[in-house]
Length: 443
Length: 140
Figure 1: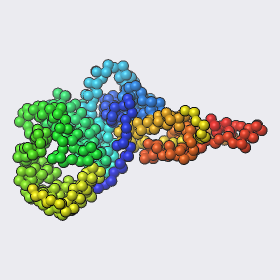
Figure 2: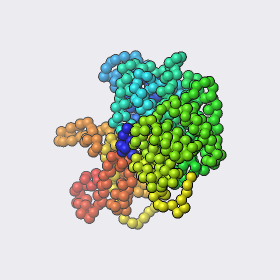
Figure 3: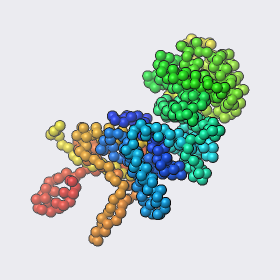
Figure 4: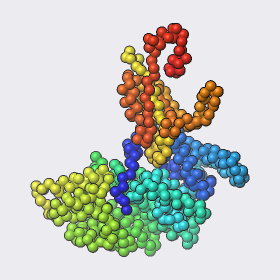
């Protein structure tokens, strides 16, 4: 894990102010739709072509809209431009090799047919094509790390650099994964379809994992200046909704994942103060939590309870629900949360789960118990470069009345994160501990 | 607004036709929006009197034989991909405007070139009926 790798941070991305007529993140959202639709037309073996013409259509907009204005229906403009570019490509290819002219004529007809379609019908078809593309990206014959990268690239419109930051990896490594994924799809002649029967559940797990990763990337905001990349969370929730609305993908664990995302997203508005700085759970203004999302989350949790299945998503959604339903921090049901973590750890022996469990344990049995749990954690070495390990240990030491030890841990955590708001928070905690407190507080 | 102050004309020439190559859709939209606000703002303030993007394709005509060859004319990094025609108070203001270009971080290069004004010597030359072709070309 090379968590320390600096990635090229685009200065323009965060400070972009949208002009009238353009929805936020329209390009990213439309690119996923356009790639899906064009792949439906060209076939999965031409996925790269679909991606290329979509990128080119976006670049055309970038070159011309600033000068000539934003068209009345930007999404339709982009789609039409991508189709025209694809047609140009095919015609050129047709001239060069007189191969399969019938197929090309057929594709030409289908490309131009889309222009006059009724909007609602077309929307449904887009949903279907997107689901097909999700399943194709997550086909078991594609290596798993490449599956996630490919889905984020094609469906969610993330660039290799953005994906690299989600995976704490380098851009070159992600580019390699993408190439490998596309090669596999070609070599293995992976179908562009929604799996059915016994094939479905295992295939669905890969899909859910991608959605989960995407949500986490937005939620934890591992790098960059904006603590909460709400748009990524929104994108993941949209994919989650797409899955729960489709009869083929609507399993209890799908609802559980959506519940988890909704319940976490509900608390996003309170996670930062007016200056964009991180607020701990105990410092958050709970009136800012989004009641509508909590309601939808609890509803999804109810749908997830249909059947005997208990997934990690169920347990995480259960934990999130405990937080969302507590009127204040003091009345949080920590014993239930801890029991969810216990079960979750039995399903998943990841050190990150163990670290979170230690935090819950400290709430129930005190900071020393939390500290002991961290010391006894399996695979602790894997977290050596993870700033949260030290941030958590720092909080334990502070609560144990050892400010010097706490400050040293916050210092270590500080060196390991690039996020501006996390750095500000950790610096604040470090100074609090380093300066001798006027009134020593013991908990 | 009509002002009596002295104004000079400048061309901003944008170089590097590949600057957008590795941008993500999100970055493309955000840069597009910023560029649009920048351009609109300059037009509204009367500082920009026109501007266009240029296609990557082109022809070059050269030599005694009037030979025509296909573009691109230079490396993509050097290729001009668009221009603004500015009216600014002075060179400094034109440069300041160029520094606001939202694509600088992505590798675009902005060349600021003052449009040559007419001067006494040129007037004289004009009256003498020489060198008119060059002057006309420079003020188009």
